[in-house]
Length: 344
Image (cartoon, one colour):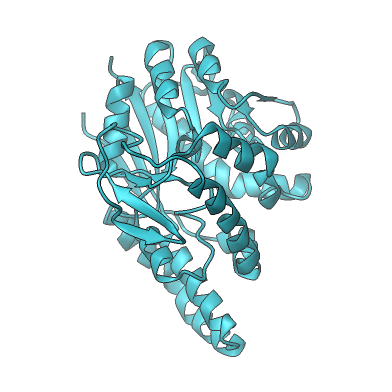
């Protein structure tokens, strides 16, 4: 079947939600460096996270970590394994959620409506094209975090529940929702929940790159024939990765921190095939230009050129949507939303 493709999305007020990346670059970089310390203590990665092929030497090094491009599927693998120990430290012990949680329900709803309602509408519209109504749709959202996506799809009339390993995020999300829909689980419990769910859609928004036991989760999806669709967004090997190499003093939100590997177009195809699915829909809208803008602004300000920062900003911001659209259409941008459809 032909893949239905959509490109780009206006940045809008995105920067207003990411001010910490600009205003606290050094603090965020320190946080990422701490996670890098943990990752560098893990065993060396010898095979590709997606296809299992043997890995060669790193293609490049960024923020002390080497990154290896798989010769078979193009997946970008860090030189060190993500392990249960790594996940426990960065997701549970260190409470990574504190960097992203909204302060109150008003800001929770604002973030949900700005970022997650468009994702929910995209899923709804694609499923409608497949002949499914909201009443036909039941979603299990894995790695649900504070439940923004669960809240968004429920707002559109779809049934959804979410699971996550962070008790603080689950508690916060349930408190923000009109009706609690999140459950805290252990680090490996998503496999059992996927295997037993009656949901016909699995959603994983910014999650697959964080799953230590990705193989087992893929197998659970493959074996549960009731799951007909998978909706996911993943970070991609992209221009943002290149910008992070060029600006070592900038916070590496994309290739660093908890991102121990990045997807490629080919590695997503291979992952889908392993599940018994195929790619049915793609929506490419990255943040590469936003990252470049952030790195430039941080560097300009570090050189005590605040007035020039405003001068540059006034001229660059109006161009960002058009520039990002070019990068999205090159299919080498930082994020991909996709819907997989079962074929086996």
